[in-house]
Length: 444
Image (cartoon, rainbow, N blue to C red; front, side, top):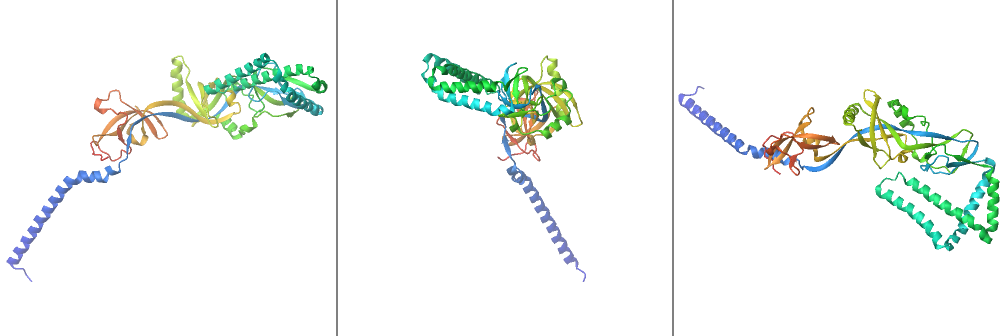
């Protein structure tokens, strides 16, 4: 049915009204969006923003290492077959021609044991005589012992216990001298006369079967040989990454590095070694890029007439060891050999050959922030952006990265930064800067 002109006009009027109404509502929505968009933006994003506070802290930059110790070591061989009884404890210093051990004929083993046991029991019984000795004599012993105890306290307070063994040796000599004095005077005690005569008889009978073994040189005594004693300071640049891995794979527990009560030995058999403790070397491998950077630092130090000195922390050892970088060896595509020397803690590391740990490359103190809070990082000049909050608004700041370790970084302001572009301690910063714009309102 065809519409009349009147009906057509009415339809057009209604259509125009709907169009005007739609435009009006569209304009109203646009106005509302413009008015409430900042608030909507803050509601959607700002409430989820994690904020941190810049604080001062220290970061240590470390590189993992695998290495081996090389020392000046001299093997100790038995002059004959029999039972070897150590006279010096593991880790103690011995002088040249000082007795290290005694070698006892197997058949005379019981005689020697009886003599030593009798001597010990006799000393226990007559030690009470010391209490009746003159006050002057007691004072001499007490002063000598107190002097060694004072040394022990000094070593403990300093934190360096590498010379504790020398205190023990001194104490042993003092007590031995005291025992000799008691034995010299025991003859005047008639009730112990028969014991002393028996002691002398046993001593004479076992003397022919006991051979004193003297130290061929001075050093620190160890009763464990691992097969790498032939490595000398001349070999430190010939040690390879494969050599290090081989030692680590065969490394034994340090529980084996103890003073044995006795050892059954054959003629010419090695029973221990002497370690010269003036200097040792740590030959280790580092990641190639780290080793290259370390080499540059070492060369700079040498140009200034110095050696690069760092520290290492080794697994199983609580103390850090100061080392001096001596040079660099060969490597492979991934790792390179580094040679370092040490002049302390040698006795402390005697039970170690293959080691793992970290080389402390750098220790930096400054403004510490998470690495994830830095963006637009320039790896060439070491700069990056960080967003701080000023007057509830996000502000970009360009900073320099001084060090990175374990997902944290130490930053500092650029030298040419303007006063209003500085970052300071206790400033608020955005932990995750993604989707944060300059000047954005941050509701905190």
